Image (cartoon, rainbow, N blue to C red; front, side, top):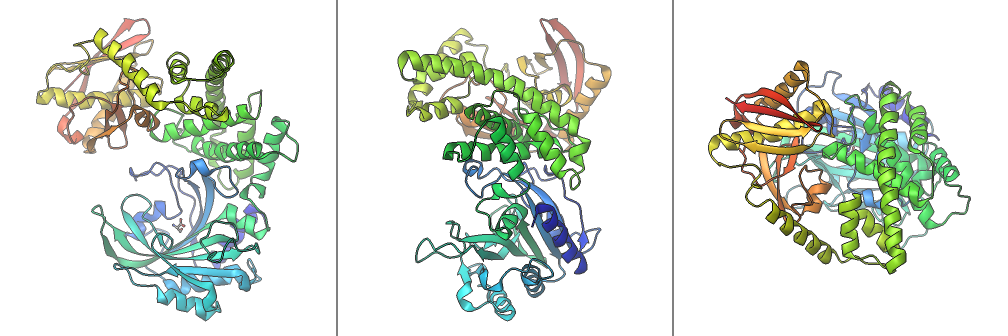
Length: 590
Ligand code: SER
């Protein structure tokens, strides 16, 4: 059974059961600011699960492209993936537990469909707690289809509850279906839900009749919904008796390609296997992000930053495998060709995908090579790498601390992060002395108008990045109660159209009444989250990071308004080319 075949018959089955087949939604959610990527098939359907009527009816099914970065560090083992496809069927206030369970059983066991051996299937149901009762009803329907009691397990909320996808929204108890691979149990307590590989989870039916509210409590939804999810990669692996998701038809050819590029022959060692798997998973994830019609390039912010991390991790693993030539475009072409019929956006945005892989690989490979050379030189001379060296690599070579740490660990060397931090503080003190008095974020007066202008300046920077590209960086800023002055790297005057677009974006964000909030974190964390700002200069214990909802994130001392609505109308007054590749914009708020 191949991926395309499983997708086809699943949708066929639910079509016969009167479900409308809907297309996969974007991998980047359009209107959920609490998460960066679509993590499940139900995610784009949340408003309908909450009660809004869906134009295609109240029985739906589809195949959704999904991205989950929560387990990114586990990618490399037999089952973890960041990118995967999820098959799902939904009842929006239509059928409930009985029909959902009966249909799942029919699809899994009937020979017209998957025809799995019923004896090998076991299930789990919610055991209940103070808030939601034990799901005896689902257990009974499983008994009715013929599953004996010893293959029905009652588990707690950590196992048998799903959702919400973000912080709030529809959720509920679930019942999960497992396939016994025939492996020996790992212990006496081995049961479905155990990770040893004996039981493979293949399907999850969630009974969504609750809404999780912002205060953490649950309320009953007006309607009973069903949300189910079957991961294609895992299910295809199970159906073919394979040990890992990297053996299936959508991954195996990529594994082979990477082996060829790296001139690796079987049997390979564990490190090679791990590196290959990371490359295979990440190249798919990155290709699907780039394939989105939103045309999001790698950047240092939000989704763009996740994309950049995926690409850079891929390049680093390629380097570990000694792949010398450029290799991302070649792998991306495979992904595009393999999936383009199901996801036409891959073909549509092919040029954008390849162009971005090429550019990012050019850029990062160089930095990686330079940093690696220096790293190896130091290692050879001193036979160790100290925190001071890591600091030098970071400031002079732009070599990320994570990579230095990773490389050092491979050599059995531990870098003292405390000392690294001290180095930074020392450096910061020096630069603070040098700029004493002028460093207060360019803020001379904390009156209400300057506060409004200050937040407007963050919006302006982000708007500039959206229109001109994410190479735009703040090179200087000065705010008085009358106006904000913002300098940035751009070689020529902006067109009237560009200026207008930028002004419009800022005013749009003001109109959206977005919350502005402050978080305290380490510079490293700020950097990882894609915050803009001067990391070197501000390396101290903690920094404050201001976010305008999911639109902008900057290291900054503030102060800021608490909601963009307070800013008022934003107006660009003039621009000026101040030479050496710098532009200056003067703007105000009314
Ligand atoms: N939302 C559930 C899951 O992701 C079922 O679709 O498993």
